[in-house]
Image: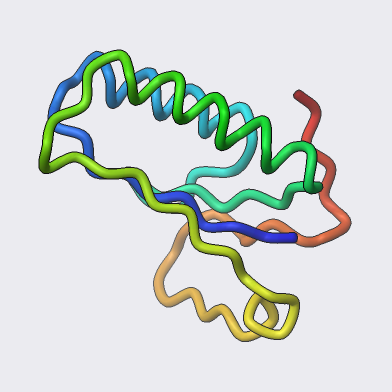
Length: 95
């Protein structure tokens, strides 16, 4: 299944840790937004890692959001402008 992970973290060190975790599971599509195509086990691992990293130092206004995209929704994603191509379901991510 495909997921969108976004975060808004004020602390530079924590934000960098969250970014590194997201890079391990998906492709950056915006500065603080990643697209990830994950199995159920990979999804659980991602959530566990992000939860661990956010405990490092996260403020009351900070957040990490994970949005699931159904297959139909994934097919309807529109990209306007020049950026990296969206992941396809056939893409493999090695962790």
